[in-house]
Image (cartoon, rainbow, N blue to C red; front, side, top):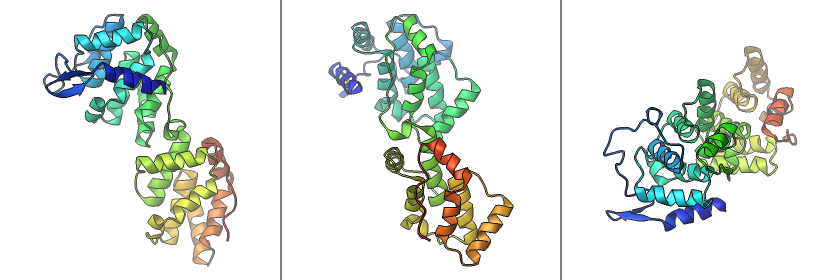
Length: 294
């Protein structure tokens, strides 16, 4: 709700330039009119203006107008907005989305805008992976906003750091999101659509078990139309439920069971109630659930 109030406050400060209504309008230059602005090479003052200018440069690749600086300064000074609110507004703006940044670039932008530095290689790899499986920029911004480094940076600029909350189940828990992502990729053979990913993550959050999740995907029309061979079916179970490729002995053993007349549900149950899958469930934060009827 707070973010909606901030957005409303921003909307109230609209400047119209050339018929285009936007809080970010009226700038000195735009990305299409100038070369790329390199925040890491710029020097920023340790005040409201420096903080705001850096975010404009990094997120929108342009300078802020004096009116924009004034509007944000007023909100920060009166504590209507916090450092976290600034990050939320810019990274969720249509103007930033239109830049169509790669996941690696998004991570770079978040680190530069919020921490004033480049991301270390290991952290960058982690967050790029988070974005690759469907988590949004808000999950990254939340983590950075909760860091002592961001809080200190805000204090250096005399800004309240605030808090950065996420509203989608996708952004709350990487392991949960990654599990659903695996179901889409390995079972359906495609990356998840945002609506479907959120819906299934929300289902787990609401109490869906591992067996219900697996049943929902494996018995979907999208998967059954594949008419997968027994070997491919077992390989899918390994990659989906255990998060790894099958070992040769395991693949042969389970495939032979299916070739000898065992039902698919009996094989699925063998995976569902394995110690390996139980550990996966514990990490995701869901229970295994009931056996499928054999």
